[in-house]
Amino acid sequence: MTSAVPRLVVAAPSSGSGKTTVATGLMAALAGRGLAVSPHKVGPDYIDPGYHALATGRVGRNLDAYLCGPELVGPLFLHGARGCDIAVVEGVMGLYDGAAGEGELASTAQVAKLLRAPVVLVVDASSQSRSVAALVHGFVSWDPEVRVGGVILNKVGSDRHEALLREALDSVGVPVLGVLRRAPQVDVPSRHLGLVPVAERRGAAVDAVAAMAAQVSDGCDLEALAGLARSAGALECAAWDAGEVLRSSPPPPLPVPTPGAAAPGPPHSALNGPLPRTPDGVGRRVAVAGGAAFTFSYAEHTELLAAAGAEVVVFDPLRDEELPEGTTGLVVGGGFPEVYASELSANEPLRKAVAELALSGAPVAAECAGLLYLCRELDGLPMCGVLDATARMSERLTLGYRDAVAVSDSALATAGTRMRGHEFHRTVVEPGAGAAPAWGMRAPERRVEGFVERGVHASYLHTHWASEPGVARRFVERCRTS
Image (cartoon, rainbow, N blue to C red; front, side):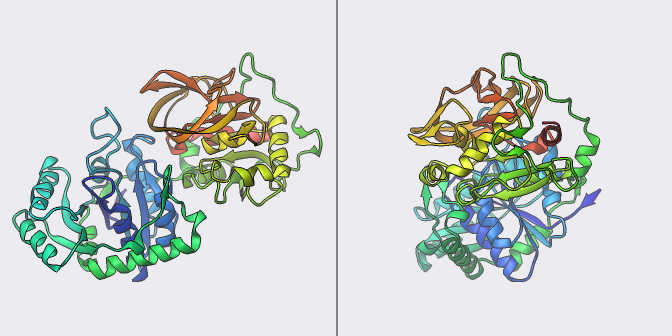
């Protein structure tokens, strides 16, 4: 299948240059002109896609060549871009920065080449004038396969500063497609793991995105940017489809108890009687944690769960005192439980319900924030108590891609299943692994991590299920058999 969705990649020489401002503002500005804009983010970041979704009214999606493999970048892009007039892809870090020690893998440059998309380079010009030409020339000439189609100059101080920058860039042969002045109203507050998510500052986030759109509309040549997007090459691949990939992948083996681990409990709550079933009687209602405390998730996860036969219901652990009626499986993804520890702890009825569901042997998948929520306590405050472990904030940032293998059979994977993931946290869980660990890390360091107990799979590792769709089918199958 050949597809030519107009698209461009917004990149930069380094982090902090203004990619998010420009990409989000461009998405919102194009959407404001009546275009259906498909938003994408290179890499594993969960926060920027929230702002992209606010700008476009569509789900923000990630394109990560490390987590999913280069071969899925095109299909996942086309899946997200279905029915759209144009797509904007925000890069990660500097244009050529990728997974440590892996060459160009997972870099913005690699994704741009895989998508056959032109690149717009956002340059922070606040502390330079003529030197901007050398910088842009270096990025343009470093890899001839990366097509830099234009430059947007950010944080320009004055008309005189702009004139100097334009004069210098005339010799490079790369058009200036926009000039943005310093604008504090577009700034988004940050904390220990980056930008504050949209869900935590809805009104302020709406205002910030509107300011970004106005800044880009006023300072950039939208017609030229749209024309550049239309120059993207055709993609010779088919769009990813959750149902199709599940139909073409082998069925998962039934869960096998891990040697030495507790046997699965009875499929009911000791206090509340038998677990209710979904209307069709198969018991595949999967509750997915959402709300301000649990904002980190990839859209493809719920799409795969639904394609595998689950009824997905989102709930908010900060507000809801019960799990959705009929819950037979639970997914608690990433986010900021450390910021909301008091509120999560105060919701004792829900903590108790989560513990009861886990004790019943129902499948529970918890990543990073979900792991903390299942611990006995977080920073001294009671959590769900599913795991005999404690969690606390730390000064040390743990960040990076991981090459992992499943150590124990679980509701997600059989032992030996290899997956790539990403860690990003400033917390510590003690102990770091249970009697039946979830993952063995192959790189960058060898260690075991996480917990497999009854139907629970809890770990710091963020994974992208599109790389191993059998994970979702196995989880839903466990919902039926638990």
